[in-house]
Length: 99
Length: 249
Image (tube, rainbow over all chains, first blue to last red; front, side, top):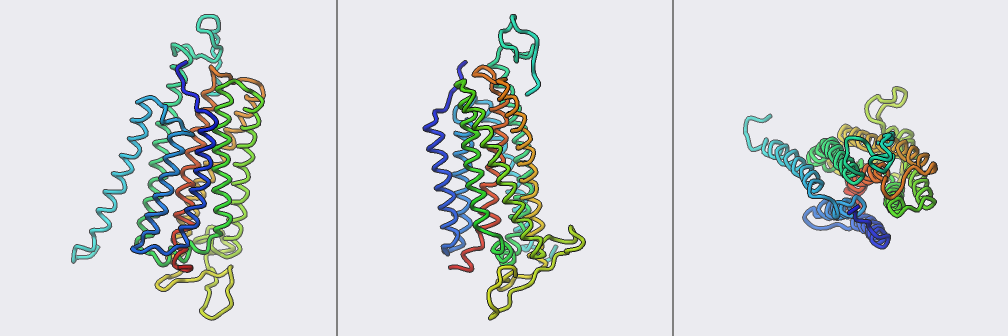
């Protein structure tokens, strides 16, 4: 078996990082950042937490290349979903005809 | 996957090895890949709802902040912590299965199940609070249609009333609650399914069905459980936190 067993120490470190991230995101929510940065801050923390879960708890860091491709495909299709929808909705008011 | 008990022992070695796989490692990798493909479809499914949230929030920022601020931040944060601890115990359950320690494996699976049920209990309390404040959207509950009391300026602060920020309207607040109940409801459904899967794992684990060579069911349910955790990692800040700085800045 060529399987990688993640040591408990690593799980513990990720677990603590996730708890710290949760505390940080709550504290950051009550700070009034300039230029609507609150959304960016919250999403950045959430994305970091999700990445830690995917890489370590879900073992993708030690996974086969095929697993990497499958995970990347999810991000790719999500990017298309958001990019194409927003490019529609946010450009509608450019037309004088209304919608 | 859990029900797989081929009778090829003696030829291929492990009793759980299916005849169409060369060995246990190939079988496990195929299972992991299958689960990931399923999770990609799940990501797209939740992605559509996140998209709806993002669009309506950008259209009605003041209303979404007002509605969001009515949610209980303490219960939301506690639930986030509960889910993260449950993900940790799930990861440990996989670890103890991989190293062949049955007792800690059973304990970790049981803890994960209990934490998952704790999350659902807290969620139920929150849903009930929304019910008593008349925040269930539309006429989903015919006897209690949407119609929250509005906090007026100068009145003593009442946490059962919705505080409308400048520019916010009740129909748009209702839109937030449609999305809130759709997303947290779908998430809760996934938690219920996860709790069911964990119950099966726990029974088989007590029977000693898993070992270092055969642990894919634990690994695969773990992937599902962590995925549901990730959905909540995004839901918590988006639904509970993003409007807070308007009131406390």
